[in-house]
Image (cartoon, rainbow, N blue to C red; front, top):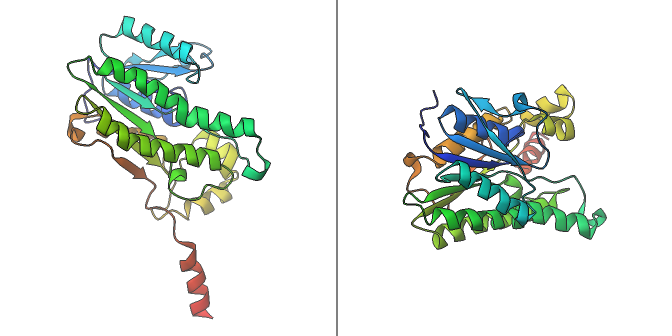
Length: 263
């Protein structure tokens, strides 16, 4: 049991096939929702789709950067679901590239995927939600990269910072029918992040040791936050950003000060 009941409600999770997005999709399925997921690459078969609670997600092949594909996806969802109650804007990411070495095309692509595309999808979802008696909720998956230096992923951090500002603005523009909020994960242990960033088990333990709670977040930690923010229990939460980082990062000066004090 999740403690939340989304029976009869429809949720769209972008990038909902793997990692954090898959955990979010499965959490809403477990809570009784009809879940739609989208991605550029279709699953190999139905067995690859998110499933939980006796339900399976509906997959829509769409690149959220292509508005024609987005409009076609939303039309298909409208044919299947009488309402679109929630959208979780999760799709995004960035390769590692220092700004001095990154091409203009790469920088533009990262910003389009992580800022422009979700805002354009949000526009279209809002148009439908405003016409629904129950309105709707839109959640954006941000990142702590928006709140601190993000070396190697500067364009990504800047795009996520733009998302956090947009969340506050949209919460004003689209109220009272539509609530808008964000979750900003810190270090999350997914298959992709382990391959690209954390490497060997000893390196992973060292990285986890920098987090006050002593571990990296799991995708389920982020999914549980989304379940809460989309629920009636959070009906007065709009324009907010919930940071999920296990207490943050220990300030580097504390370590330096300890060394100096010991000397």
